[in-house]
Amino acid sequence: MIVYGDNTRTWSRSAFLALTDPTSRLIAAGEAAQALADAAGSHFPELDALLLHGDTNNLPESIEVKEPEGYAFYAVYPELYASAAAAVRHLAASWTVVGIRSIGTSLGTAVAAALPDARFVTVRPIGIRLRASCIRRRTKSTCSCSRPARTRSSMKARDSPAAPLPPS
Image 1 (cartoon, rainbow, N blue to C red):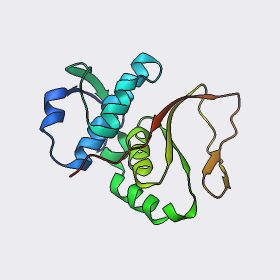
Image 2: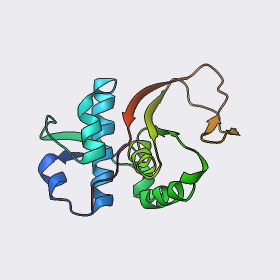
Image 3: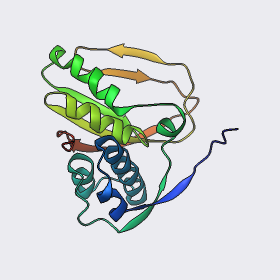
Image 4: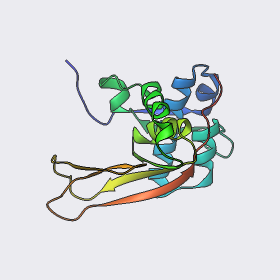
């Protein structure tokens, strides 16, 4: 039986630095960045360094992180998102990538790194849960999903410049 919930564990800088697989590093960086951004209530520069370059300077030695449900239970692979983005990179000169926390923190980083001149933003939905109906609008360089809610809901955003993933 699979039990879903907000499973937490301790993320440590030393364990992160010992990771050699780029995908594992990306997922671990996303866990830490999401936890730190949520704790701070917004973006701070050290998150860009962690997500985009794996730089842990100025970060705590350990923090409590939530298990990313998409990776743990739904077989989500960031490499496939990056590959899909690379396949359409020729469709526009610049891109905006929106990652919805928590898993979107690392998925957005992978996608933005695969696109030319990508602007990366993470958002945290707040307010009453959104309805399941979805209206999709597509333009040349962005795809957005609008979900009507029973009451107003908002997103908090943070910008992050895109950069390549750490070398493997």
